[in-house]
Length: 112
View 1 (cartoon, rainbow, N blue to C red):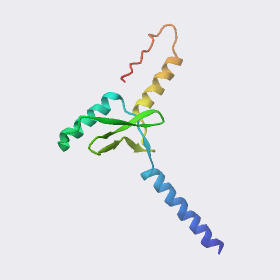
View 2: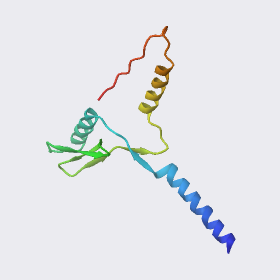
View 3: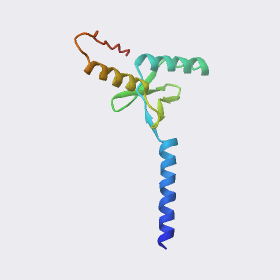
View 4: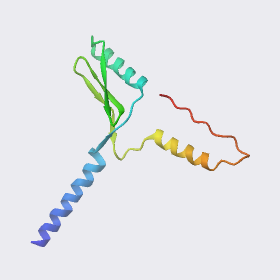
């Protein structure tokens, strides 16, 4: 009886790990230019005649759009995939904290 429960618990844990590593996704914020570009790409590929789209927000960040024709685009990536922009900001912040008077200051450019 206990052996069967232990086997069931291990199978559940294995299934959860596979789901987490392969299927769990998180929203990726988009800039206004990216959203407009992807909408124009949608219009070109599908010959969509709509002239308006609505931005989709998640936690006050734009993560996609909904076209008037009914098409919806959401920007998602697997949880295990790292965000390059966030990594670059972390590296640059570390460089700013180690700034000495003899080094040149580091300036970050932000494209929104």
